[in-house]
Length: 489
Image 1 (spheres, helix red, strand yellow):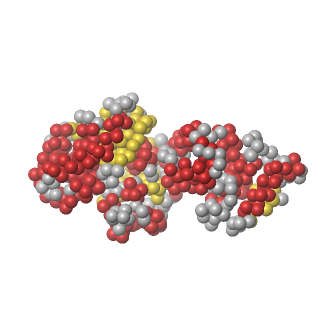
Image 2: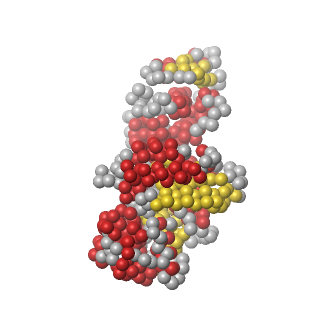
């Protein structure tokens, strides 16, 4: 990525959608433009956890405006991520299908821990370099993320289903503020967040930071009231609750530093923040400039190189955790990528996913050798894997599920040419490496014309490797039951 390249991060949050545009300059990202719109998708989930038509329309309208600003950006310059509301929404695919068309770029639904990791990266990148042990808190619309870390290393990441929109709707209906409502809201938040106290105590931290959302709003309010800027204390929180109670309702609150878009959710956000102060014994918290969107931008830079791509480290951890054979995994992955390059010469091939699938294809053996491909797929669909989106993990799980066995039972899109080519190359690599040693692939050539695929071998190869030849013939028969064909020559 060259200096001067424009990058953009789109954050589809539960309360607001945000667009951050920055310029890459010598390893840093300098802000060019920032747009934020209050969409309140988190308040648009009905009792069945479906997004209402109105909530979806608000989202489409905002993304259309973002799309106009992103005109001219290439695919590698934009990354859009969605958080808790779309993690929860049962009809999220309905929304995402149109949202991707409106925005013009893919939208990734990230897990809670991945959101926490990216938040920490955003905060750490915009803080001065320090060896301090940090607690980072982000109170969003429907979730709260807690991270312990040092420098750029996030060591503990958790996400909890408690947020300013959810708590405001549940405990302050119609925006009414009463002492009992604040008491109940804070106790309920503590009940969900109490695990955080047990998790953070053994690790410890020195300085607490709050990222965006509620923490930023509270910091602005107490600073406008004349308290020390850049810090939130118990005294400031008590004062703020007194002011909210005096107003009696959200629409009557008049406080310096409180924006109109934050007024309807300030009661729920303050309740969650007070619960965290009490549980984690926080004396004061500092608002941080960095946030999720900044972490997304810097993660785009990190993905430029394997050494800094967190997904590489995650795959290595999964291989070690489930005791897969790393040499066999590398052997299969490298051969699969070699075949893929033959099949799609010069293409912008998604080889990383194929290499990861090769390294991970045997993790199901940790559960049972019987149906290990099914166990491996299940693990990938359900494991917390830092750096990966849910869609990326599901695609990996399909490759692992399909690396052997019958193809017709694989619930995959056989109209997706890139996926079919990846799947074929992985299956062929597993066959050719069945003896768990480097295979003889001299003279092997994989080619394709439309849906007709062809694997050629040199003269004498079949006689030299009869078992591999037999397995390849069986593989050719398996593809006859799909819209694709594999011929051997």
